[in-house]
Length: 186
Image 1 (cartoon, rainbow, N blue to C red):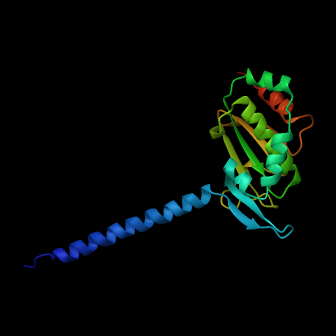
Image 2 (cartoon, rainbow, N blue to C red):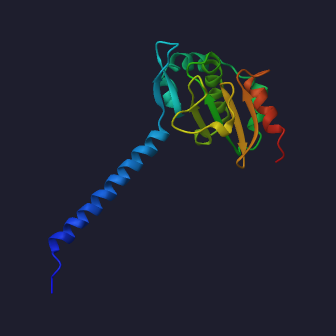
Image 3 (cartoon, rainbow, N blue to C red):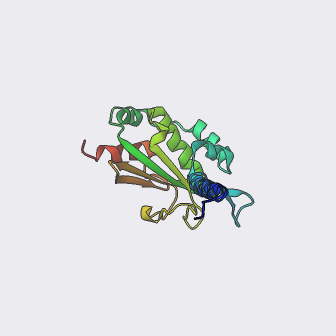
């Protein structure tokens, strides 16, 4: 009759532990890579561009930094439109798809964020995604969003798209936003 060796069981336990530890480490790295933007080279410009899911702080740290601050500080939204929007329900989520290489994104995104700040909309309801010139986010699939031009501001209510502002608005961002929000039944 053979007696199982404690040493072999201990060795098998270590293998399972390190296998599990390594798997968690790899999964965590994969998830983190999908959540953090990547700075990639752009053949048309001397600087790198943001690609992937971004935080607002990333806009200051990238090639958008100077433009973001300048546009944000110098934009004065229509106070009447802001007042009207402020009285409406804030049950929307908004996805902003931008190109840090794009002049319209450099102009419109800081302005839009100023409007969001004036309205007191929680940044947690925003999702910001940077793209390359082919409108790909590399680390995440955004093909379902059908992005043709950037920036694109997509408004969602209860998970359904209710409207979008593409590139440069026909009037102003806040008036377009008001039009989208008021066209939806409560």
